[in-house]
Image (cartoon, rainbow, N blue to C red; front, side, top):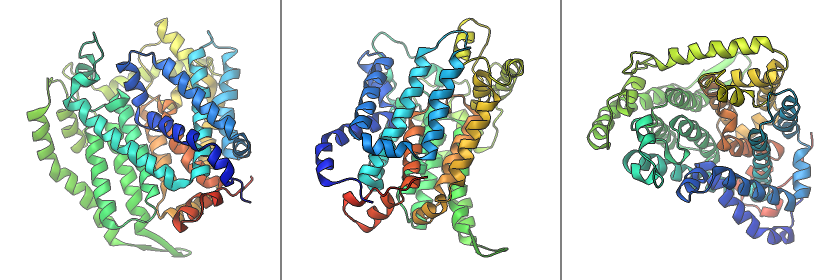
Length: 449
C-alpha cells in the first residue's frame, strides 16, 4: 500500500531538510563541538534538537503511528522509556537528565526511521557519507589543530588527557572510535554491491583511521567488522552440509591486515615528527604501536595497566549487583553514588551498568532485543539485497563495545544507525525503490508485525 503522496511530501519538504541538519549534528558529534564554541550548554542544544525530533514525528504522525506498531520499536520503547521510568521509583534520587536523554534517544530513533521511510535509503546514505567525511576531518583536526577544540579561557586539558589521540567533534577518543565503526557499517551497507577493490581500500582506511584514536576496543571491533565483510564473501552454503570457501576473500582479508602493518612505520614516523606537544606517557604513537602488536595490556608510566585497573573497578559494581540482582539500585543510581563517592571510576561495561541500575531482568531483556533484531525473518532478505551481512556487523559493534564501555546506549550515532536498519526491516522497499530508481512516493510499503 502506498502511504506517502506528493502533496504530503511537498508540505514537509523543508522539515525534511531541517532534519538532515539534525541528523548530521547527531552523527558527527558536532552538537557538542558547536555548543562548546558558542558557550551554550550541551543540555540546551539537546533540548532544541529534542524539539526538532518531536516536531518531525508530530508532522509525520500517521507514519510514526505505523512505525510504532513494529515489534522492534515496541521493545525499544519499553527498554528506553517505560523500564527506566519504573526503575526511577526506587532510585536514591530522580535523575531528570538521564530520563530526558532516554526520551531523546527514542525520539531520535523514531524520527530517523520516519525520515528513511519517507526519503529512501539512498538519501540516508548521502547523509551517512557526509557524516563519515566530517568525522574523519574532525579526527585529524583534533590531532594537529588542538587550539580549535579549546574554548575561551580553557587550557589544553583534552590534549594532555588524551595525549595526541584523535577524538574529533565527539571530544572523546573511545566514543569517536565506536562512532566510526557504526558509521562505516551503515555507509558500507549503503553501497549495496561493491567490488573487491572498494572493499579492500575502505577496510584498510577504516583500520588506519580507527587506530588514530588509540582505542584498543575500537581497533578490535574494526578488525572484526572487516573480517565479517570478507567472510560473507568467502562462505556460500550451496546445499545442506555443503559450504564453499572462496580463497580470494580470505587472502584479501589478510592482505588488508598486512598492508595496515606495512603502513604503520610511515604513520608512526609522521605522527612522531608532526604531533604538537607530544607527551611521552603512553601517547597515541605508543598506543598505535601496542595495538599493531596486539599488546592490549600495555602499562602507563605509573606502572599500571589500564585493563587491569578496569577489572579491579568491576568488583565494586559486582557487589552492588548481587545486593539487588532483580530490580537493581534504581535508574541513575550510578551517577548519584559516584557524586557521593560511594563508587569510584566508571564500570566501562554496558552490561554491568544495566544490571547495576535496573537489574538482571532488564539486562536479559536488552540482550533479547538484540537477538530478536538479528533473528527477524526479513533480515536475510535485506542482506541479500545489500550483498553484505550488515546486521551482524552492527551487532558486533554494539556487543564488543558493550564489554569495554558503559556509554554504548548513550551514543546518538547508534540510534541513528539502528533506525536505518530497523526501517529496512519495516519496509525493504526503501532499498529496492532506490536501486530501481522508482518514484519516491513508492517508498513506503506497510508491513505489520
